[in-house]
Length: 339
Length: 289
Image (cartoon, rainbow over all chains, first blue to last red; front, side):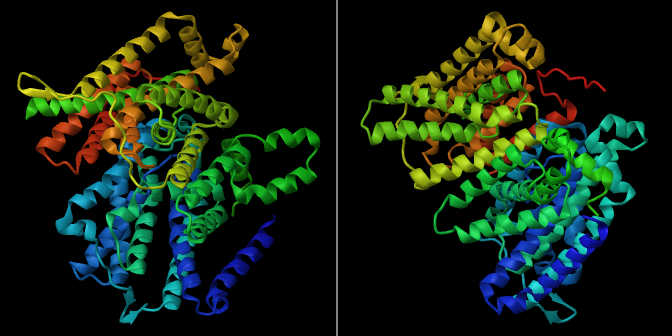
């Protein structure tokens, strides 16, 4: 796909997203799902920044979401900070935590990093539960609906547009980051830490920054989540949420922003559509993960380009299509077709 | 109080150690961490439960059959899912086993439901008092079983042909195959053993945690912690890691806070990994450029 068509499709999608509440015709359930999808899109993109672009795994990402949500709730409820200020503050606070978490991650990789982030994912909800003087423990907190300069987003439609605008801004920021010097450094670290060091990239600093930036956006999403749902408890951020977010990144596609959108849409809808049978959404999500890893390592977003490549390529080149996700995403990066 | 905490800590730690042994075995032969291990164990435990309650079999027969099921289950998972990603990046392998984790958990929930069920203990019996502490026969069984299995696998790994083949497969797949070793069957065997170890842990812990699809959550997570603490590639390391985590968490539960014990365990792990990224008994792997 050349850049021109890509741009056209992007504008079309944005237009459709703005049009959605009109089509949904005020059906609250659809608007609610749409809004929830935006929150997950932000989380999926920020996790993708870490996993897809940076090559660092985090399987406890819901803890960053929890920190953002609680920070924002406490800022607005206890300290009386207005929402428009609490939102970025929650992001920065989460980023700070992300930097601290990123420090040990500098030394770890692969399985060890996976287990350390797993521990982080388990420990934070436990801490929130225990620290009930601040967090309300089991009974949770009830943040107010967001309001900016006296304008309160008190209906589903208003909420939808607020989340849409924030999501688009975050998408734009992340897209710029990826195509900046820093984004290229992340990819270089993913491909080879040794080569990245040789090129003069400060690998430990950039790894910690990666965690920090990813945590920042996830914290924003957490703040939005808290004020959108209006109720948060430690249980909302347990491991299954961490795994769900990870699944969104994988199923949608590594190192791809449209992939994160696709993954978030699909995997937010699965639990909504199958809530009558307990366990079914877990099975479907798990099976989707397994199938994608086995047959489509670049995620669902790669179906189109794969099919196109098969049509145009010589039979000898077929082999390259079957390569592991790393190699495939390098070539994608190299061509810069992700713009 | 203190001695009692130590006893229950060692009993819990033995179970973490058993599950961690299974993880380490797979890691040593195929460089792969099975995040679905706990859920596989949970399904094997449910099979044992069905045999006891619906089919009316005796405890030990069901125990044995559940372990046979675990072995077959392990082989199937290895053949169908893990073999295609044998050479894939670590990230894909981790995510694949996480996918299996979710799928197994969901399937168990759909088959057996989410009502916690009670599960019989291996040996019943009044606690025996040794000095100031009380020990149940079940705790003694769990502890001895763990130590015995550790020595068994240590021996198997170090001194038998199968163990040699497993170590060779970990070193270099191609060369191992050229030496006439069927790498495929070695991997299947490892997965079978690992699933059985997990199954034993599941069957033995079910009386305390009660049986439901989430029963292995805590245990599996601590088994990872134990394996990491021990260095992930050392069998004695896994056992030492498991026992120390069991001890540490019971001491925290007794003297600091019962709700925060898992959090403390992970702070300990992260601290240790920060100081010594290869774990207590791990060997530093040097990456070739």
